[in-house]
Amino acid sequence: MHYPRPIVQGHIFGGGSFFHRGGEQRFVLADMNLDVDEPKVQLTELTFLAHGFNIDPNDRTKAALFEKKGPGAAYVDLVARKVVRTIESPKRRHFYGHGAYSADGNLLYATESFLDDDYRGALIVRDAKTFEELGEVPTFGTSPHDCMLIDDGKTMVVTNGGGVVKGGAKPSVTYIDVASEKLLDKVELKAGRFNAGHLAMSPDGDLAVVSAPRDGLPPRAPRLGAVSLKPKGKPIVTMSKPKSVIDKMKGETLSVAIFGDRVLATQPDGDMLTVWSMAEGKLLKKITDLKGPRGVCLTLDETAFVISHNVDGSMALTLLSTEDLSVVRHVPGSFTSGSHIYAHPMAA
Image 1: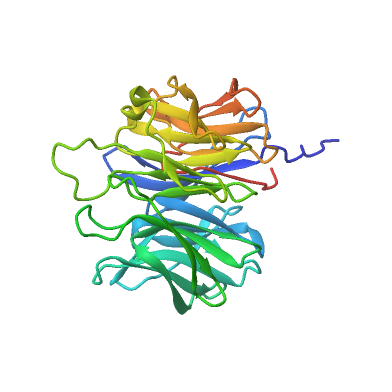
Image 2: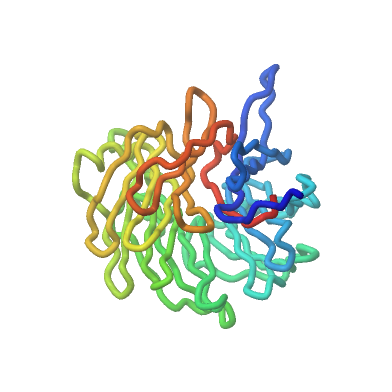
């Protein structure tokens, strides 16, 4: 008798795009089951490059996907591998990549910007079943991107990318009381060359933010990404040493994950993965043998970090031990060329 294997590490999901024969660009949501000996990718066809991935708390076989800086969003059946319906936004707004379900799963929030109002940021609130717009919550910043609910769903944390370098709104991380829609705290990045992109938070409230270059930099200014760390109760600090590593953060620092004291961040254009100490605010290690690392997440059992990266022109996953960062597994053919990857406990 065949018994199903237990869910240990989970399925890894991520957006991807590739060019089909004839030059047609295709977009997919890729699914790799790590709890089998030889994972084979399963693809769901999309009409946009999926960035954020949010599991429906009331039906964990479904997920809401969002495009970064565009009109694309969809509600997807992960088992049938098909789009159930699209999620619409008016032409004066664009989705900015991420969203979050309320704690009870009845509401869906999405970071969006008003294109005709200097990219003013808002969390657009929708009914999670009908996707009807119910209202908006200010993000207290410009060009919001990442968002996360904490405090059992009572507080929304949002990264606001900020405006242009000269005269634009400063990049920030805002903490918003969901019930009252009031600003609880605003953490501004003091390093003026970077936006506020993606975030990760520890269970204790430590915050890590990764960044891309801000718009409006002088032509000859270096286009670098950044890592900023904020242990709970302390100021946020953008890492500036060692210079030899900072100078390799070309283009942007893309994805970030926290486990214990360690913060992992990917630098695709620099072909580098960096590891930082949250408590000490210093570099612990750089890993340079993964080409173009993009997404990073933890396996469900927290035994490994999963990294999506390029191998000879195609995407693969490499698992690094959370104990000592040694390579424990390599999974080819993942199609996860988007910005992020996510672990989810679907049945095999």
